[in-house]
Length: 177
Image 1 (cartoon, helix red, strand yellow):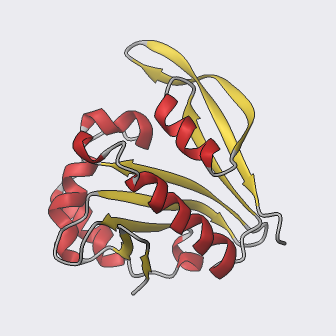
Image 2 (cartoon, one colour):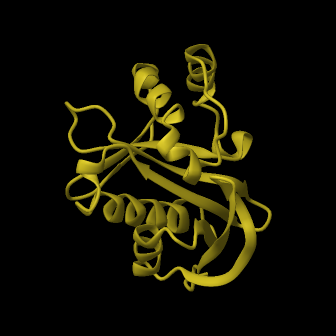
């Protein structure tokens, strides 16, 4: 099991007892905008997903980790590597903290820092990227804090409330490789 520890949080692999948390996250319509979800998920589908979550990143092409504050407490968020491309040494990054009370507490910063270090040092990735709605100021601030640079805008990329919105793509190049 992957465990990445920081000063105040740790990242861990998903466990079967994360069923209700992941189910709640996937079915929270307030998060659908950032997760590209458009339909609810059943507990059955989430259970199947968790049963297959032990797949290696090279096989699954993604890695989803739970963000936790203490060994005795459940997950408070998720952080993902997606579209993992080992040939070109890159992956996308996504992060979501479920409860508003846990946002702006530096939890996302610590989780992203841990994932960047893991990606560059353990997976030997050359680059990470993030797709962020241009109006999502907190996420833009989080990613740019760690050196992600805006490299482009995808015009009218996201349809939300019958209006199209632009999405920016941010990229972080591992200068060590």
